[in-house]
Image (cartoon, rainbow, N blue to C red; front, side, top):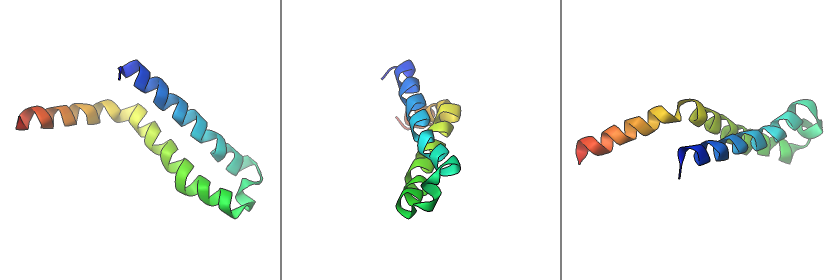
Length: 72
């Protein structure tokens, strides 16, 4: 996968998973137990991980590349 395609995909995942969190903060989702648990257990971790990957993913890729080239 090209880097630009990966970045676009991660950006859209980040945007789409942010929508339920906005509903949790500003809407009635916090009063619905099933929806609130979904936001807390699924959407927020996905949002956080995609944001971290967009921010520092290149460091992880470089680290993995160094590990694989050093052992081979």
